[in-house]
Image 1 (tube, one colour):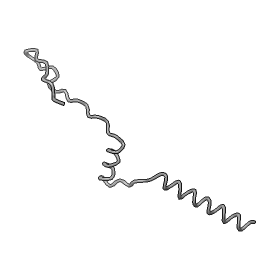
Image 2 (cartoon, rainbow, N blue to C red):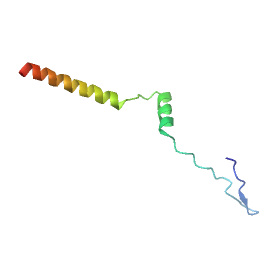
Image 3 (tube, rainbow, N blue to C red):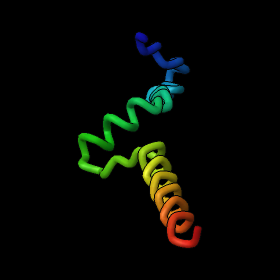
Image 4 (cartoon, rainbow, N blue to C red):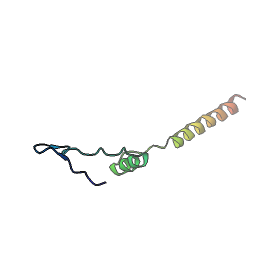
Length: 67
């Protein structure tokens, strides 16, 4: 988008220092930035699937021991 010329009153340029606000970052842009900065990435579905597998394994073990 081309920057508009500020309103000239003859003595003061109104809006000459105005900068348009940057658009908000999308989820993908935040993810890419965090990967490039080296932040650890966590996949919640992987964590929950591991936890559920451990719980199921413990239930099977307990049922075999006490049955």
